Length: 432
Ligand code: KE4
Image (cartoon, rainbow, N blue to C red; front, side):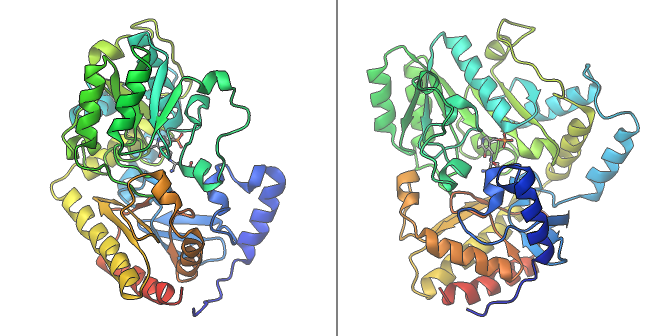
């Protein structure tokens, strides 16, 4: 492999100092590059499809701050809208017309959502939606899938994906068994396992929550009939179906995976894109369920910064920018070229490789394939992935620093960016 000497002097200095101040030197574990090894890159600024680090190196970015940057980083129209609204203050802690605007856009876009509540992160949205599932059904148990990640709330840290999988943490210390005893798990894409759980826990399961397209075990798509099957099983058992679309919402399609696959859940969680890079999460769904949420109903959930004008503004402008004819065709075309190109390079150089894309979300495994679930994903060649990641980084391509994450493109990525990425991949993969 031709190793380009990436100058990371300043990144090393800043990251060394960070490790004395913050656990692992980061504000979120996956950023520490633990599973791929090597020096994490300290960002200086981002714009469009690009990152510049503190040493002045430029990268084509396929993480997009983990999904929000679907219009490209620091879009001028988003920045201008924020500059304008900033003059009116940063937070009200009171009703604000901007919340109505974003709520209407979300309700118009997402098939399952008749009413929505804004919070400040995907974790908060998933915590609240689980409480709502339980409040509405009067049942305590929930089914999640191995390798799916729904934020870091205690009850979800059971065989979770993303950073938990990245760090190989089977579960997390500090989570009492009493909390996770109501969390049942099944392999993704396994309807029989779900049916069995319902049979073994009659009338005790509030519902099923899943990533309708998985991004937190790496990129795993639902088998044909899987989502439809879950819709039927939950209906047959008087349980709720919940799509965690924090990552897929407005990325797989404007109406999310539920629009793409034409399966309507009872409740949906959102985040990332609807905040345009500012802290936002949301949960929403059937009106009869959402009206249980305080103060309309008895289920309590609250948040100081929920619905704040800056986050609402960034979200509104971002959705305006992507809600245009041709957006998702463009995103799919550019992302398919990237994914197909990576697979072709892998196959042509004799590597076991599989993966693909749906719209602006993609992923690949060094694995013969197919990868149906987390167990399969764990069998991919993680050390080969680490070498691939480092080689691409040294050639100015910034991929998610974990096999158990997905990749993201944006409207700012150009054909030239994809060509440059594939040229780098050809060099790196042929040297693995
Ligand atoms: P946040 O609390 O990180 O906003 O959202 C949690 C969450 C919930 N549901 C899904 C499907 C998610 O993907 C996430 C968060 N995604 C990770 C990336 N895999 C965030 C990156 C990180 O943890 O640093």
